[in-house]
Length: 87
Image (cartoon, rainbow, N blue to C red; front, top):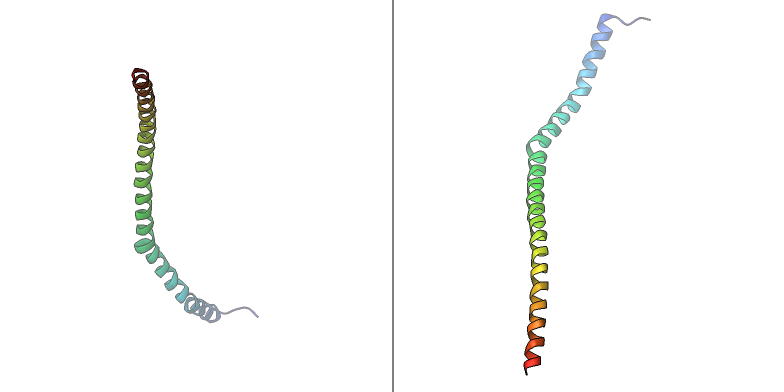
């Protein structure tokens, strides 16, 4: 038994009725992602990136400080040795 135009129209309307809530939920999810989730992720990314840069710069400064401290230790040790030799 072939489907008539009326049958196809009824099926189409039924599908539209059934799919409408899914379309609404999908639209709500898209809006949530666009207006809430994406901006929050961008904020997290910006915070992470700036923190990474600070730490990267801090590591360079730490390496310089370690070198300076090593040189100071050598100078203090040498000066202490010379002072003890004088005393």
